Image (cartoon, rainbow, N blue to C red; front, side):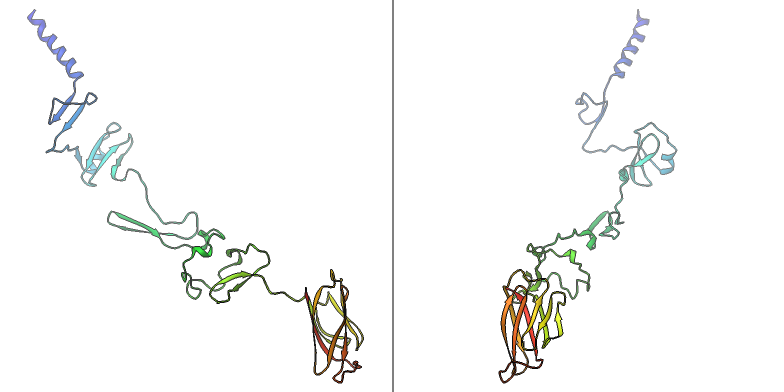
Amino acid sequence: MRLLKAPLFFLLLCGFISYSQIKIGDNPQNIDPSSILELESTTRAFVINRVTTAQMNSIVPIEGAMVYNTDIQCLHYFNGENWLNLCEALGLTITNNPIVHPDTTIAITRVDNNINIEVDSITGLQIVDRSIRGDDIAGSAVNGSFHIQNRSVPVIKLIPSATPNQILKTNAAGTDAVWATPPIAPVAFGKVNGNTTVKIYPTSLVSVGGSVTFPSINFTPPRPDGNYTIQLTISGENRIALLNQTPNGFTVEIFDSLGNPATSPIEWYFTIFDF
């Protein structure tokens, strides 16, 4: 019976060890149920296996193995094929090489372990058309003499007025540019010498007829109605009077300096505006 006790005790001991937990350090009696190996100490550190790069590369362990590389001074783990440096495990790099736009827009400065990223320059390619309004720009922030190259702002970069056919002009104080209704342009104007046209505009709309005393201006095609304004001017001491005004045109009477109906061509001018 005594001969059987030793083998039986050995088998029981092996079974106990196979399912046991190990704790090293402080409070060995307290170990988490899920731990196989647990370390606890406030005065000592866990030191992982320390090897050189050459020694590490000669080891081909199972996936998940770890060592401390004394040449590189960083932990490495084995992924099943290669040793990976935990200090560079993400494999990320930061570059200012442009991809979306042709120009570099950020500046990267590295000082020791610090990386500073800041805006380097912004060109028109990064600005959406019509995205910057006047209230987005601080007063005197943009000076045309220093910050804007001559003839570098195309029309598409301007925000148009909500009212059609307006023009850009300065305000009364001359301090800001504003959209405004353009001045009324003449429909036609001309310089006439009796019944002979000296200069007239537009030639496709108006023509001269009548006589030296009663010259006329004819519209082609006729105006929508007879409501238009006529400004008349005559040279010297001569006089001019409007006789009639219709959608087809108007007729004037020319007098010489003595008040008599003109018998020879006298130079006069006209300008026509919509009423």
